[in-house]
Length: 161
Image (cartoon, rainbow, N blue to C red):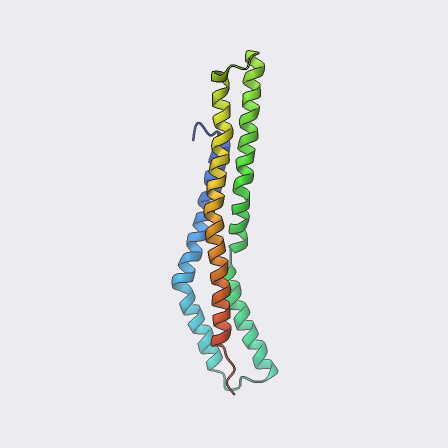
């Protein structure tokens, strides 16, 4: 953490929050959503009449609620995924500023004096990219799973004639 500079602490916090939200989504998808889906299906199947316009609006509302619950926090997670490389770029800029400060103070291009600034420039970039890549794959899976589960919910709320 010391070699990466102050920006690395911010990147670590963003990655921690991102994975906390991802973990919450996994818990919801694998455990809580079953009971939510079961409740919505029982509400729909408990209706005596399912063919009227009013009933169809109730069906659409149930599907919409299920889809909203499945997609909760995905936009925030995706925003944090995008934020990670930008923070890495900020670390690169601050590290390069440090390199230029060392060059200005020493008056030369001594490689040893510039090495700490170069590491402060590269480590946050790498950390931001690693955090972003790990989040991209999970957000893609969560989005695909949410779409699939929403379609399955719509199929389970079929209209019986």
